[in-house]
Amino acid sequence: MSKILVAGGCGYIGSHTVIDLNDNGFNPISADDFSNSHERMVDGISTLLERPHVNYRVDLCDMDATERIFEENPDIEAVIHFAAHIYVPESVDRPTKYYRNNLNNLLNVLDCCEKYGVKNLIFSSSCAVYGNTKVLPVTEQTPFGEAECPYARTKQMGEQIIRDYCTAHPEFNAVLLRYFNPAGSHESSKIGEAPILENTHLVPIITEVAIGHRKSMTVFGTDYDTRDGSCVRDFIHVMDLAHAHTKAVEFLLHKKNDSNCEVFNLGMGNGVTVLEAINAFENVTGQSLNYSLGERRAGDVAAIYADTRNSREKLGWVPKRDINDIVKSAWDWENNKTWLYEEV
Ligand code: UFG
Image 1 (cartoon, rainbow, N blue to C red):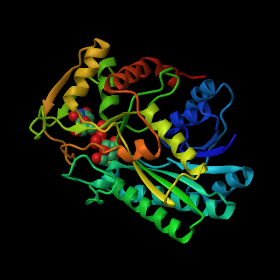
Image 2: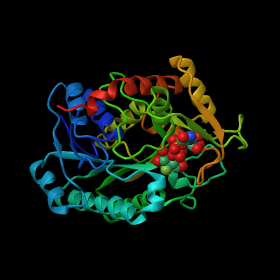
Image 3: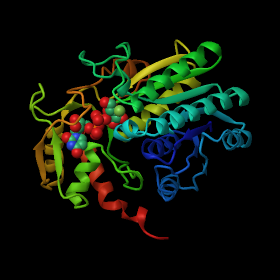
Image 4: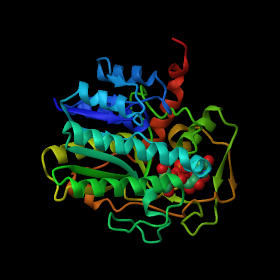
């Protein structure tokens, strides 16, 4: 069983990827310092793995501690690098936090790959690299736009760092995965989205309002040039997204890559408006949501969705779950996640 190091493997997308890798015959271990995840996520992961999950509680900005992971695991065949700060508004307020963490930990991982002979890397990038593009859907060839925030810039810089590293190391292989709007949870409700920091993403806000953790929510903008006036996003189920990482690992280990740095968009390839997402939630769950129509949120693009031909054709990745599956699983998780916060 190939051993895969999942950096940030107790976080939202990382934990789902650990499960999907395991389900497909890989041996995932993780490095996660719990800076934006709960230690008890390890329990949920272990339950699904049906064995204790191996996590190194390490801040990957700490080079010595990072090296020890590679020393103890000389059989790592690939690293999937999720570990990053991810909130757009926080990155605007605290840019140095984002640059320091998101770039230093990537540099440390790359240096460890070099020193310990790991030849494969999957990097979590974002549709944020495209900026406020007007050409839809976006393909992997759509040029980087002006970054809307420091978070987005760390993803642009991260991609560039990896490209330069790949040029310097022709024997090294990287896949850059640009996520659109990940949402939803594992169907078991044993793991799901549970950040430490306040969530600003749409689907968890919907479920938090429905369950009563928040009184109400606002639809940010209803005067966009879209079919119902609200923003259009490409929501992708986290389990489909997780599976794309397994596909990317197989792609690299089976040497199917044409170049040593390949890029893939990961979305459903179609847009769903904010109001459609709310309607889907109400229809699927029978809950009526307390929301109001409000002003536009600063920094939002009107519409963005992916051209996914490349990931479908080259990775053989076919996402299966739609917005109804997303809101259903997110709601199930919202109703089940209380165990995460209970005292042991
Ligand atoms: N929205 C609301 N009300 C809310 C929260 C969100 O109407 O309470 C709307 C937003 O205005 C936006 C849509 O829901 O139109 C989606 O917003 P999210 O915050 O869930 O997601 P974003 O599209 O802003 O963020 C995504 C990724 C980021 C990435 C960004 C780049 O999650 O990682 O795209 O555009 F940086």
